[in-house]
Length: 311
Ligand SMILES: Nc1ncnc2c1ncn2[C@@H]1O[C@H](COP(=O)(O)OP(=O)(O)O)[C@@H](O)[C@H]1O
Ligand SMILES: [Mg+2]
Image (tube, rainbow, N blue to C red; front, side):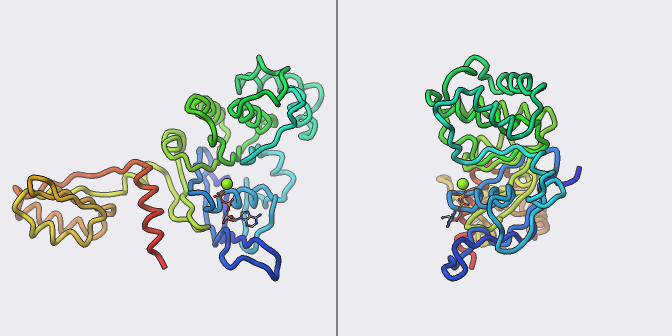
């Protein structure tokens, strides 16, 4: 399947020509988002996620570089018709009812009057807000507002949904409900690109992720591949400190066990395989080797942490 988003060396400096920030909010971001996926765009606050999404939505212009959505530049009207968007802090008029708000959105989207009501009923049903259609938005909880936000984003049956931190500020129940809605959209064939810093949610929902830090992409790819490629665990029996010392410089994690043995973790198997094979053949009783799979949270923090020491 072709890519739904293609970003090439995208860079954004905020500020005027004469008063520009020295460091870019987004620094030569290159990223391909394949179709048929839920893509999680991860990064701590200030990483540049919203900036990227604003660039994709044509709300701001890049300092350099290009982006394409569904094969077109972000300012293409044709593309705008095929995307649904939920901004990071949507503001709703508190005096409108949920249905009135969706009618306005549907009119802006030029959904014909003949199908408008039916479609609004459908989206209210999808986000489980049918019973609140006549209630004013001012009385809604954060979770209910997020569901109405999703409802407006899917009104035009988009091919691609772009959601900026949709899970933020929700309680666990609200998060689960929203995740279910996002997964339901994936099931009907909608691609989803969403940003988040809530990692445990992402691991269950996304097929692929990208991790952004200080405006730079640290890694991107399928979660199963990123995590399975993460390494090897070497257990060294007590009394074999020389083996542990030999491998320590390459280890990303090490624990000296209370029995005198060692547990070493290597996050990349690069260059280690032949060395380990040799050791296994020569001293089979002294070590055991197993594969280690990080959870996404450990992977994320390791990537962010190691980025601190670059440059
Ligand atoms: N309108 C703006 N003017 C100046 N700086 C901004 C503006 N918007 C964001 N920034 C800065 O750009 C960086 C990235 O911000 P943002 O894209 O909002 O990150 P994230 O969404 O990942 O939290 C931050 O350092 C932020 O302070
Ligand atoms: Mg943001």
